[in-house]
Structure formats: C-alpha cells, structure tokens
Image (tube, rainbow, N blue to C red; front, side):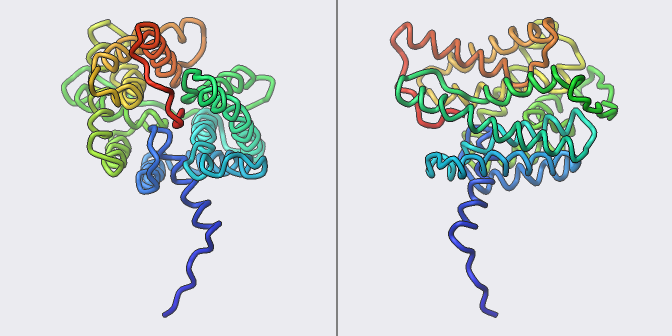
Length: 302
C-alpha cells in the first residue's frame, strides 16, 4: 500500500520536538529525545502531558516570532518549556488552569532564551544552559499561593543507605534531571544517552557517580543523596564540561562545586533544580577564561 510521505513542516516539527527533549541533556538527537519521551511515559505518565505541552508552546512561540530556523530545528526552543511542563506537572494537581500556566511560562522561556543566545554568540557571554527554566520555575513556585495552585500530594519512598539504594542512586540521578524518581526510568534515560553516543552516556554516568561520592563524603542529607538529587547536577555538569578531554579536571572541579553549592539554595528557601549545574559550569568557564584556557563559546548553549 502506498503511504503519503510526511510533509516537510510536519517532519520539521517532529524533529524539533524530539530534539527539544534531547537538548535537556545538551544533545541534538531525535532518537535520544524519543527514548527520553518514552522514559517519561513509563516512569511518570502523569508528567507526559505537561512535558509535551511545554515543548510545543516553546516551539510555537519561536516559530511565530520567526526566530532562527536552525535553532528551532535543533530543539533549542523546546527544552526549557519541557522542563517547565515537567516541574509544574510534578508539583501541582492537573487542571485547565495549570495547562494555561504551562503554555504561558513555556512561551516566555523562548522569549527569554533569544537574547541570551545572542549575547553568547555575539559577545561571548557564558552559556545560558537551563537558566530560563530555573528563573521562571523559581518565580512560579514562589507565586503558587497567589496563583492558587493545588499542590500534588504524591508520597515519596523512604530510601535506606544500604548497597541496593546506594548503587541505584546514580541511575536515579540521571532520571531526576527530568523529575523521574524510579530507577527504571533513569535506566531508560541512560539508554537514550547511549543512542546519542557512548561517550555521552559515559560522561553522564561518571558525573552522576562522582557527585554521589562527593555528596556522601560531605555528609549531605541521605534521602536527597540516595534520591539522586545531587547526582542529577553532577550528570549535567559532566556532560557540559567533559567535552574538554584535555582538561578532565574541569568536569571534576565543576561537580565538586555543584555538590557544595546545592545546599545553599535550600537554605534560602529555593529548590535547587538545575541551578547548581548552571553556577558550577559558569564558575569553571569563567576561571578558564581568566587563566587563558577558554575556547570561543559554542553555538549550543542550553
């Protein structure tokens, strides 16, 4: 039977959406994005709608504002929206009001990312990474009372410092980047990174394990450590800084900084999310520039 081919704009939309999911882990790889989407569907199906809605709103805003087509296709206008959709869906009960909030916040994330991309490329600013997601996420969580959002009452499992929960913590950490607590979902995300490249998966794994070890040595709260809340930033830091193979100390220093900085956010009443990843990478990159080891900022800045 003859099948009509997908129209170019449909293929472009699908590719951009899947790239948006993979860009959460600093990759441009549709198959990787598809498996990450599957991991959300398996690990937390209640978050899937918010993730898709956030990614679509980010993409549509970029298209309507006529942002650079190559950036849209690469998924740069997608990953912040996906993360915002996941965050709000994880924290609050579903409703039409929440869906509207995800749409607005995700669209705004695309508007915020544009000047950051321009500043990075034209003026060599530090990469934006997930800063639009973190900034808007903090704002929305702070305003949850005035916005009359109903908190989700899902219970979290109590983890024990035995060899099973400890050995699974680094897999949980990779899944926790996208708010997935179950180790199976984390394993699917790790498999998605293998599709993008074995070095990508290896860096994420090493970053997660290293952050876990650092957090244990520093006596961080055990439930947060075993739940992967420190490892998630370690994995992202390793993916961002591990590209400089000549200087692996950069990734190691970044992970140590991320673990050390993370409790400070809780102390001021803000959830850490991916903020330790952003700040640690900025500090390492700034130091590299100061001592003359910096390279020109890449066009990929998520």
